[in-house]
Image (cartoon, rainbow, N blue to C red; front, side):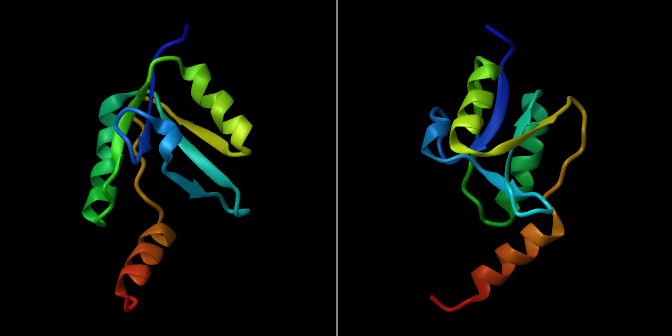
Length: 103
């Protein structure tokens, strides 16, 4: 078993119910995998400020999340400890735009 990693998910305990992902420059789906819980919590705080109700989910075996991403056809990026990551401006614009549309 490898070291735990952390992802943003709609569930605190089951990442398979919905992982938070972003799009890369080519439109591919990328899951952000954090090596440090505090870094994942910091990123999630930015998302909460946008009204996202997400959670940091611990994955005890890091290889499991990489296999899941591969199975689902998603790419992933590993966020090293202490690396500062904030939502891209496109994510912010999209979220704010979508919330301003009438329901």
